Image: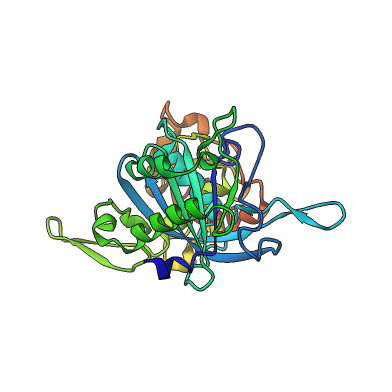
Length: 336
């Protein structure tokens, strides 16, 4: 154990603020981390990262992300404030978007505070590994009791500032957090006791349901697609503007035909009931980004108010939905 611990070079430790989680006014798209956490912090680059999320009392899930490093540029051209930002390469979600997504799904209604721990592991498959852990999680309660005052002291907003931890400046805290990391990664009993989110596994497998003889194909990258689409639309339904993230689904405009279908321009976030109208051909969006309803839906008191309204589009025009694909759906279903 002691020999393997040396592969962790630095650790960044902090709470994720409400602003960084998109819970305040403004449009913050970054999360900060400790300066000099890793030697590439001044470069704008993407690094494949593994995020492990610990939520509730004893549950855990993990996902591979893109760490999009994007420090702030001063007027004189120098760099400050290391941060990683939102973004999408259509294959994997950004670390920031995944943190926001899983916080809103699993931690938002908890009294716990989200703690972000980043591990710099230069010679590993993933240069950076991230732990997002609720202070209500059983593991964190034990961990928190062992850490120094520097890592547990909160400001008046209940936040812990970014702290850089390594062998030279905080040996005891570094040793405790490194041991915690290796316990999670190497202790099979600990690892297997958690519930894993099956939707995020990047496997292409067939699941046969013997009761109705149907076969469901797990879509490669589906969870990343959902995170990317919802993030582009500020985690809201593009029609109803519902912000209850659990009720919102990422809809493919053109049917799923493999991982190439999972680009943000081929997706729109729809509240679950509105999504069902789409799949049944009772609702579409034309190339002017206006909602078009089938006569059945127009006659519904619940949905007729949506007819003709313009959907809410992403702030970034690169993420606007494909107009041709939208209009094609309308044409196929005779939505005029």
